[in-house]
Amino acid sequence: MISAGNGATFAQMKAIHLVLSAGGARTFTYVGAIRALQREGIGIRSVSCCSAGTAIGALLAARMDFDEIIRFLRQKPLKQYLQQKTGWLPFQYLFRYPYAKYRQPGLPALFTLLHGKDVRLGELAIPFATVGLDIVNDRFIVFSDETHPDMFVSEAISIGAAVPGMYPPHERDQRIIVDAAVSTFSPVWLAARHADDCPIVVLKPLAHEDFRFTRNVLGFIGELFHAGAAARDWYNMQSDPRVRVVEMNFDNVRVDDFALSTAQLNRLFFNGEHAIQNALPYLWQQPDRTAAPADAKTLSGDDLGEYQATAMIQRYRALLGKKRNRIFIGYSDEDENWLDRLIVMLKPFLHKTGMNIWSNKSLRAGDTVESEVQAALDSAKVAVLLVSPDFLAEDSSWKQEIPYCIEAARRGELELLWIPVRASAYQDTELAQFRPARDPEQALAGLEADKQDTALLDVVQRIKEALLR
Image (cartoon, rainbow, N blue to C red; front, side, top):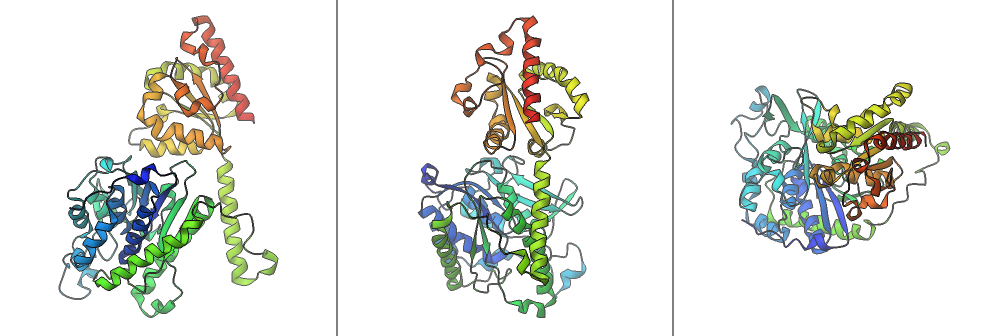
């Protein structure tokens, strides 16, 4: 067991969200990079990862000391963590399900050995998320401390390590899940769920320009998957000004080459640390995204085609971002009667305009609460919060609804209206920085019955005005 770090990074002024890309054995460069971040005292607000990066990300989220991890890895042969092959004959695995060269990934066992025990995602010290690809339903599935708090870290790592052709798919709940790196190499969108101004730092292997992989059919197929995933991720990265990409030289180490010598490991650790040291001066600088990469009039052929593809995707995403046409209402179950009364007052306006409302009552059986709430927030033009002591006391309010609404309102993406339903300690929250829909000293519950409807009509008028702005 390796001891945990002292957690001093959380007290520092500078903090980041960290994204660990896929890359197999190449991801050991991240170990050196994380050690450099720890030594610089840079706080890690969240860890998002996929594929082999999941194991390293879990160690970080458990607040492990990466100096000690490096000492351990230098002493232990990594090849043992490939585990037992499925057959003795070469390529035998290609002709029988699960079409995997190895029986089970060994990275979950490596985590347990380093940490001392397996733990649940909800027990990790730093918010953590990884992603798998459900090949039955053609959907991504996020596995995080919020969506699966009771899942053991070893299972999340097994999902990340379910690389087609190397390890068996992970089967759970009538789903067959594989490593999501076949569709998203650097899942920066996992970190985008955190609505703050901290940089999103993406660690990834350096893109190489050696096309010798075309001489090998398996290498060629692998590069095809990588290119498709990396192209999608590139557009995602361009869409968020918080993203900083740090690429790391992997010295021609193969993705599946876990039989690394101590000298090779030391080189990967050094490359990761060196990449972070070079990137540090730029992590908190606002990137210049105003200048076009080139003048379209000077381009032709493939260069012009690439330029137009980028412009079209950006334009499409901008149009999607403008389609905020919903009223989101956040409330506590204790105040459900006020939700119902507000909706009744809004009904004539909704019938006239076709606008719709989303609240927790819109959830259906089988829905994933976090993802549905996020989708509703992303499409809301006005967010209405029914503020009461119960609402402010709920963990779910502070995990998602209130932080998102505040940050989105500050960025001008939606109008935030909060309604004092009952007297509360709102002064101790960031909501105090926003003008309420009515005087907090005149909370709805404290009004006489005949004045409550009048007050609700005034609130509805405020909502209508916000929708028209």
